Image 1 (tube, rainbow, N blue to C red):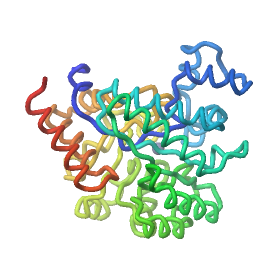
Image 2 (image 1 turned 135 degrees about the vertical axis):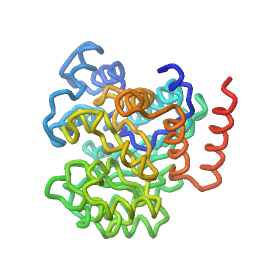
Image 3 (image 1 turned 45 degrees about the vertical axis):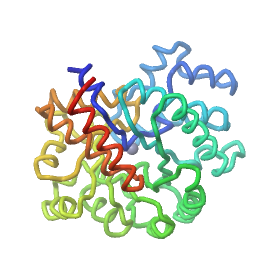
Image 4 (image 1 turned 180 degrees about the horizontal axis):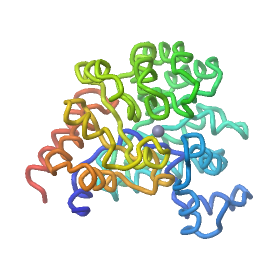
Length: 339
Ligand SMILES: [Zn+2]
């Protein structure tokens, strides 16, 4: 079954650059940076980075301090982005959107424009070598001053010709409503970017409501607590707002207790455009095929239901509509006649 799911054409709409480094690469980058990591061997480092003891979202996010320290030079950012395309190809992905907050790479003097330019170089080289197109989602973080979010939104619009297709708000949700960053979202939307917002992960349905109505979200990252408000659930279904679910990540942060209880099944059955994503290949210790396998095993998704979710991801990509249709139709053709 895993082999079959790996071959199934898939798109990844929710994965973080700083959550998806290869342990081997981290060790090499650490040498270049003169940094000492929590472990000196790839396997030990992989285990250390795997979040299996977090009790909340904030503890989960602490792991990212280690990876972000390694993403301060253009060469490092370019390499990590390139390797993500290679890893995506190996996992049967046909398209991916890589999200990252470029402000995190400015600690040693790099500008946000330089950081994104490096990310885009890595993606373009990867696309050339492995045939997988990818785009960039720029994130601001909830704990940032809203003024900084505005600056990130302006930079994101400016970098549209460097693969930036959307704007997102990530980071710890507790006590930080997305509405505070409304101006940044206005700027991004008026500048032609797609909007997705991390919401309803740690915070309740109210954060999803705000993400949609105050921040113009057309996709929601996680949306795990959407089920708490049936009227909002219907609104999301009727407006075709895509929910980017991350089952393993939700287990790690304690948002759901077991995979079998994850609301993705309920959302799918309700007719919501829902798709499976990983959040982080490193911290979650999964690739997209694993999430599809988990959904099949824990939530009884049938092969045709899994295919439907995979196609939904192509349809809700932040690409021009004709490109989405082309990716979806190619996937459909391959599903009809697997080679
Ligand atoms: Zn995320």
